[in-house]
Image (cartoon, rainbow, N blue to C red; front, side, top):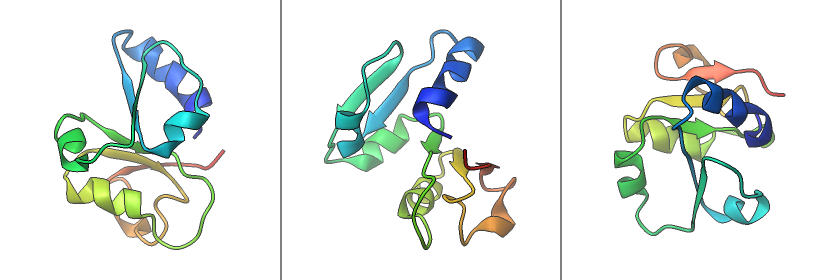
Length: 102
């Protein structure tokens, strides 16, 4: 689930949808309609309080994804990949939505 391939589908569902991106990843993503790059933010709690859903599109790595656990800790609905769900598979479909890596 890469931003470039998954976000256009969200725009079709809700043309007013915005995708807020936080962190150093912002430097690697081209500008586009509906994308708002926040950069490095000092207060992730504030970002989660304002989010309707969190997306963790990680598709490489090992171990449990800190970003997945963080989003769940803030009680924000989460969509993540199989890689992002690693170690939490039994909660898939209940605590978060898991999509296959692409």
